[in-house]
Length: 193
Image 1: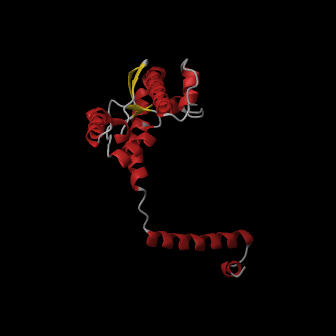
Image 2: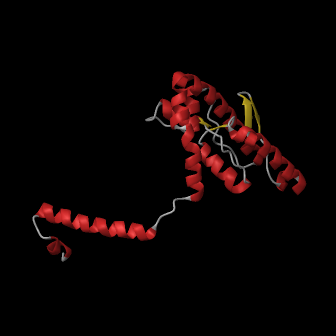
Image 3: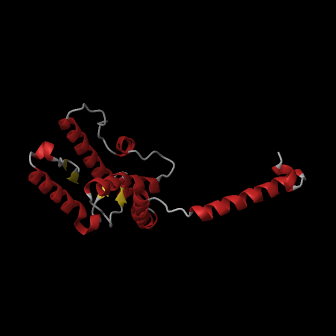
């Protein structure tokens, strides 16, 4: 969903189940891709955007290389020890009543998504104002991490198993030596136990 104003959201269903034809569904997807990738996503604001951006890339092939604004991260920079869930932040910083319980109809899901994006839009303005002079700190220490973290989520970590095995063996030897020093025994005495 999209929200350009706190009182308005636009939810764009994807798939032929809504649009009726593959051609219409692809047109909707092209429109969503165009909006999201404008300026590389630099103008997009998410709440827990790592989750959204992961699925946008994996399922829809939409990548946002310049995305960096996230209300979860903005709040984490303000108050690292507090909760950062969207429902919690809405209860503290907005007058929006709880909206996350909805029935299983598509219309209810669309309403839920619409409220989510409107609340995220409101929170962005509130949290950005609260950060004030600290906004550059957020951009430097939070915003710059999203791209690398998203790549890590999508690609994982390459592990050199041979080197890892050597390191584990060396650490096992070191642990045995340290135990021997602590207990005043010879390393050979410990390996027999």
